[in-house]
Image (cartoon, rainbow, N blue to C red):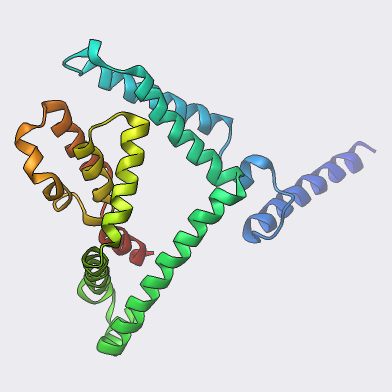
Length: 232
């Protein structure tokens, strides 16, 4: 009797493992554990919170003027990031915005691929010639950079950058030059974005210059992002 019970338990365990593997291979299966569906667990959340605390502590300890730290602005920035993360996971409207943006980006990359195939033909076949950076990635950077230049010429980039700069200035209480450069990093990159505030650079404080440099290091231009996506 004990052997039959053990055998039954073993079969149940095997079925559970098999169901888990099938569910992992088939995203359409909806009866997954919550932590598997969302891609994180309580431990990963606590790890992320610990990382935020450590980074804030390091920044505070290395600050040259700790009394000038505005904790309200710090926690406002963290709250915005957490809200966006929760929105992407739980709020369909916010998730839809990011999904639409992702589809547009992928469609642009498909245009790049179509043009590259027209010009280079079989040279893009990685199975025949291997992965060649100049043929696989460089056309994406060139196309996206040209597209950004065209949008800049038409004034579309300026409108988006000014809107983002206004939002950053209102929520995080930073200067107009800082917010403009930070928003421009998304489209122009770390080297070109500071040129938008070139007249203000000589009169900016050390903290403002530091923010401009930090924003440049923390973001990447759209062309570079497209290059990374093309590796996938």
